[in-house]
Image 1 (cartoon, rainbow, N blue to C red):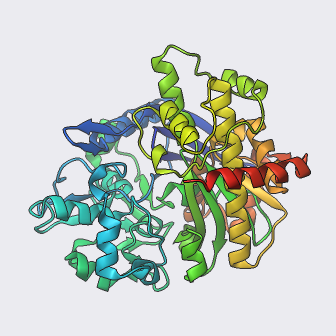
Image 2 (image 1 turned 30 degrees about the horizontal axis):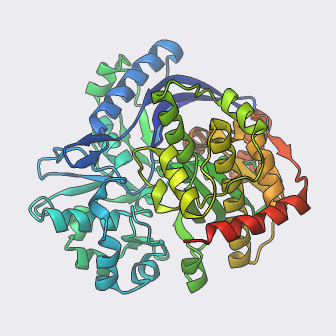
Length: 492
């Protein structure tokens, strides 16, 4: 069996072929492409048509390299959306969540719904990029654009519509909108009413594993697939972090996972949402997990800071190879600088190097001078931020864990993996790297009847990938430095 995982991150997209044979999965990257937001005028957009074009190119490559495709699944980041008009035509490029239109809308929403009102209606934390604030921003700026008969689709649903001609939404994606009641698994009608959105705007919400439709004849022809057999588009956990969470190689029932990519997602998979003042005050959120479950998670800045630093260095002609940067970081002085990775300075700066040094000056630290110094400061600070979040999730749930399951690109950085183990005092189980694509594919295979349950799923992942474990070291020193980190990052 071979399925295609279309995995779209905030910086790149890829099509990966995943095959299951003799209890193991194998991955083959077929096509990778840049996926960065585009500034046009005063707005920041996601280039959805270029993404679709690249998906078609990837399907053409897949047809030539692997032949028969059993299914396809698409995952993307959450919160972003688009509208179709009454004729089913796309109403412009979707806005990127880093667009500025949502600025000030959290305060406006607080006036409408009350403090914590949206959280208690939906279970979802107030985050500056949430769909509800983007919609308020559109309405505030251009009420005409927000009016009229439309169909609301999340980004993977737009792409699914292009591929199949069918309109539907998926549970994990809509859970990120802050308009969907996770406890009752239905739209929060009071929220829609205040936003002036009719329930008819939203097509059916499918549960993870459902079939969204089959590739149309036109798409199959464009991809060179031919007419033989239907190729279903499976509703995977379309929110990428939910697909990643399905790739955790854990046999125990309660575990903490960290998906470290552009964003870092830290949390635990639960059966029911946890909607309490503690969850809100600790900045945690409930989001949909695969097959109707809940992720209790905290979302923090992740490798975004390093990605943006590398852009700065590339413009200067400096070496941006990760092997080089890690070597330089290992040679840099430990614990010389600390940053609060979620500081507003780092949301969308024109120059991340300058933003980090602004933060250092503001918090009475010396400016950082070297690439290794920047890299090490970010990674040590991230490790301590992870420690805070892990302590919080254990306190909220009352469930202690000995092992953290680290997923995503950060798995490749052994230095950082060891930092996390040292900072948290827990064993770090690192892998798989391509967790989102793996989870995407495993959901497809479960939907097709090739995998029966989560235990079998975890066993296949364990046997298919090199999972490296890191034991904590130098705990007394790291605990001491954590206190220093807290003092510095609490400065305003």
